[in-house]
Image: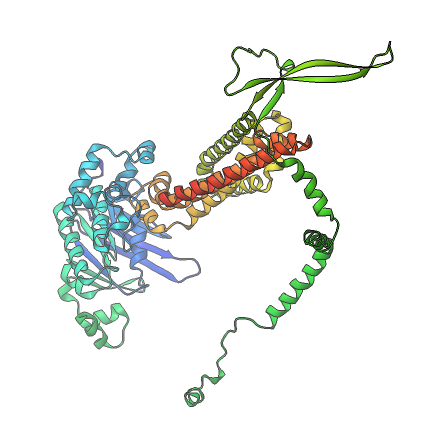
Length: 262
Length: 337
C-alpha cells in the first residue's frame, strides 16, 4: 500500500473540479461543483435532505458515476484501485448482518485478496490482527468481535463500520450521515471516535450531517450545501444565523434556533 | 359528529371502496366461464358416479362403476407382498449349502394329471418342485429400490444446486455481466423449467437407456430451472446497503456477492434447496414410471402384470418415506433458518 501514499504532501487530500451529476429525468443535483480538502481536515457538509450531500459522497466513493468533472486524490485521478485508500462510513452502517463484527471489518480488505481467500473468508493473519486492533480501538471487546452484526446495537454497529473504514489505512474517510439513525448520546460518542481516529492517522474526513450542533462541535470546516451549490464555506465560528437559514432553505429563523436547542 | 362533517367541507370526499360494480362483473364472468368449463370436464358424469358409489355404500344400489374398479384392485392388494418365493430350478448358481439370510427351501409336490396318448387313460404323476422362500425378501427389495430413488433425488438436487449458484449470478439483473448474457441465461432457465420431468425423462431414457442416469438428469434439468430463477430473484431483492459499503472499498463483483449478498440470501437458499430435495424425492418415485430408475420402474412393471399385492407394498413404502422426510426436513429447516 506504500505506492498509494500521498506523492506530494502539499496536494489536497481531495480535489473536485467541475463535477456535474443529475439523475434520470431529474434536475441537476450537482452543477459545476468544485471543492478542495486539505490533508487531515475534518470537513462537515451541512445541508437538508435532497441538498446533494449524499450524491456528492457517492460520487467520490465510486458508488455513482459523475456525468462530468474530475475527482483527484492527493493529485492523482480516482480509479477503482485508488478507492482502496478511501474509507467510508455509512448512514445505515452497511454491515452484512449474518457475518460477525470481525468478518465485517476484514471485508474492508477483500479488494486486495484473491478470489479463493474471499470465497472461504480466509483472511491473512496480519489482516486478522489489524481487525482486532481496530475493533479494540473503537471500543469493542473480543466478545463483540465474534458476534453477528445483527446482534449489535446501533452504536456498536457504527463502531464496526468505522473500524472497517479504517482497516485499509485510508488517507480520506467519507462519512455519509454517520449518526442519522443513532440516539444523541451514541451520536456524540461516534462523532468523537470518528474525529480522534482520523486525527491519529492524519486522514482527512468528509462527513455529511444535518445536525447543526454536531457540525459546530466537530468540524474544522463547514461546507453548507443547498440545491447542490455551496452556500457557505468556512470555520464553524463564522456560521451566522442567516447562513444557516440559507443552508436549510427556511424563511423563519426561529425554527433554526429551536433546532439548535433540540 | 354529523355537524362537524357538514361544516368542514369533507362531505365531497370520496373514499375508495373495497369492491364496486367492476368486481361484480368480473365475478359473473368467472362464474360463466367455469360453468362452460365444468361441462367440458364432465362434471355431471363425476357427480352421478360419486352419487352411485355413495348409494352403493349405504346399500341402496347393487353396484357402481367406482365400486367395481376399486374392488378389483383392493381384492388383490391385501395382504401386501412381503415375502419372495421363487422356483429354484429357474435360479442359476444358487449354493444350497449357503442360503441367503433368513431364507429356507420349501419343497412342494405337484400332481399333474394328463392324458396318456398310448393308453388313452388319465394318469397322475407326482413331481417335486422346490422353492426358495425369503420371508421378507420382497420388502427388502422394495426398500432397496426406495434407497435408489432417494439417491437419484439427492444427486439431482446436489448437481442442480452447484450449477444454479453461478447461473443465478448471470440471471440476476443487477449483477449479470451483460444484458445479452442476462437475457440468454434467463431464457435458458425458463426453458429448463418449462419441460416437465416426466417428458424430459421419456427422451432421456431413449438417449441413455433404462436406469437412474436418465432420472438424475431429468430431475437436475428441472431443478436448475427452478433454483436458478429463485436464487437470482433473492440476489435482486437483497438489501443494497452492505453491497454499496463493500463496493465503496473498491471490492469486485465476486467479493460483493460472496460477502454482502450470500450471507443475506443463505437462509432463503437453504429453504429453496430443501424444498427442491423434498420435491425431487417425490418426483423420483414418479419418473421411474417411464423407465428412469428407482421404485417407479418396479411399480410400473408390477402394475402392468396385475400384481397388486406388490404394488401395495411399494405404495406403503413410498407413503411412509415421504412422511418421514416431511418430519426430517421440517426439523432441519427449523434448525438452520
